[in-house]
Structures are given as structure tokens and as C-alpha cells.
Image 1: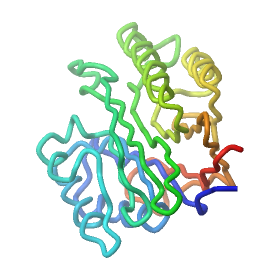
Image 2: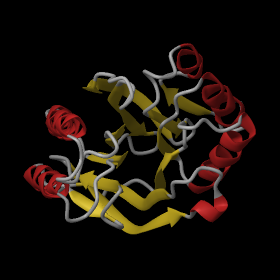
Image 3: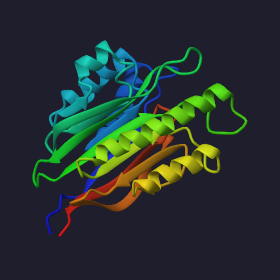
Image 4: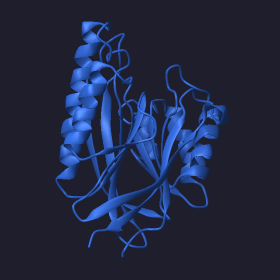
Length: 251
């Protein structure tokens, strides 16, 4: 049976509203580096966040890649706020896919994107998409404003289409996002329907963040366990979500 070694994947909202000092961002990235070989982030939307990432990850003795790149992220941080990073000793980038989640709305949200990177394991050449996004806050409950609920519906539709696009090539998908969706809300029901439609599985707690896997046509994702990086170890106010997993070629 062809399979990768067990690897660790993590997703984190490294708080950008309000922004954190560079030293705090560096601290959280160092924690992430010790816990995973692939990392996706949300709210990574200030130039010094990418400068911190370049220092902690890009110049480390086992250098990491980034989408967007460290320099591109510094120049256009809002468009790169949903980012993917990986240890280049373990993974090689093959392709990147990005799509608009929603346009910016004054007083509600900046423009946000969906982003995924197709990575190849350097030993086995097995491949997997790793992706992330960040839905609007305050749009999942019936009592929320019509504007925020409308943006949440746009986000759900965009997420549905994005996963469908990634699945076209037949590769498995590991996806972590800050969905801002609480269990039991109308948006939660719709999110579950989308995940089920695409054959996905939720790992760990349901809401506000979600960690998902979707099997490929020729490659499965075997998950050993799910885990968190608690806020007590971080400077951001969001816990990190992670899994220990491996890619397994189907017979």
C-alpha cells in the first residue's frame, strides 16, 4: 500500500482585526511551525504579518513556501489574507487555485478570498489540495441583519462552487476555515448540506471554525486524530485546529 508518512496539518485565524504586533504574529507562527508541516491562516492581512512569516518560516533551516508569496503578501496583504504555507522539505507546490469569496462592504467586511494549493508529497508524489477561507461574521443567525445574511449566503455558494472546482481533478482536499457559523443556525444546516454533497467529513468540534477532508478518486485521506492549539499557547484569540493524517493510494 502506497502512503505518505503521517503528517500534521493546522489551520489558524491569526487575528488581524484589530491587528497584532509583529512579535505576537511571530510567536504564533513559531507555535504553528512546531505543530504542523502545512498551515493555512485567516485574517493574515497586514504587511508585517507576511514579514513575520518570512522571518519565522521562509528563512528557517527547513524553509517554507507560501501562497501568496511572502513578498506578494506584503504588497497586497488584504488579497492574501487567506493563505497557505508548507514545509518545502516535505511538500512541493504544483498548482494554486484562488476565487473571490465576497466583495468588500464598508463597515461589514473587507474583500475575502478562497485559496487552495495542490501539494505533492516529496517522497511518494501523492497529491492533495490544502485550502482555506473566512466567512463574514454575524450572518448565520435568523436575527442577524439582512445584509450580513445576504453575504453569508454568497459565502456559502462560493464555498460550494470552490470545492466543486477542486474536485474536478480527482485529488483529495484538506480544508480549514473560519466559517463564523454556529451549530444549530440556518447557515449551519446549509453548510452541512454542502459538505455532505461533496462527500466531506468534519473533524473536531462543529463551529465556529471547521476542519474538513474530502477523499479523492484515487487517493484517500486517513485521519489518525484531531487536535487543537489552545489560545493559552497563542497570542491570537482563536484556537488552532489540526489533524494528524496521511494520504493513501486506493487499490
